Image (tube, rainbow, N blue to C red; front, side, top):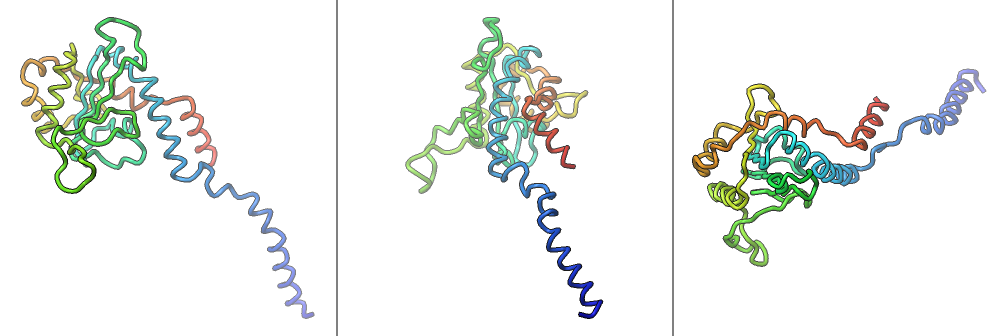
Length: 233
């Protein structure tokens, strides 16, 4: 065999022999699972984060009702900390309401103390109680299901939720200090204020540290997962 051909054969043989070793040294194609598996894990984290952190944070900041209105594509900075991993944007308008029903009695904060209500959009995988319109949906869209809340009806639904619970403090995401606590747009504030009237707008309080701390809150398993990710970088 010609020396040049022999060298080529040896090089090819070396590549073949090295391929299994190189493949074994490569990280797994999906070291963190598929996107669906990741979403399921994130959904579990979402529920556990809200169960774990929300009640003590609301009590710490003296807010017994926290109202977070937002528009589609103009979401509040808290949006990703409150919604399911498959949720891309708010639903036209979404209003999230959190109410600490144990605050008035002064009992210790607990998961069962917090009502989580969504006025617009979905339940985010069951972590919110999603309210629907009292009207039937128009057209052939199902078995007589109710229409989605929309427009001014959402503000009226919010007013009803507030009047049923009579909170002492209404926390809103408005701040001159923290950008992450300043997600309430001027238009949403105007619409909400007009619907609620002076009785309830007089109870508005800037939430300040509440949204900031909820966004920053992490479970031990989330921190462990982050360390695992950074180890591969």
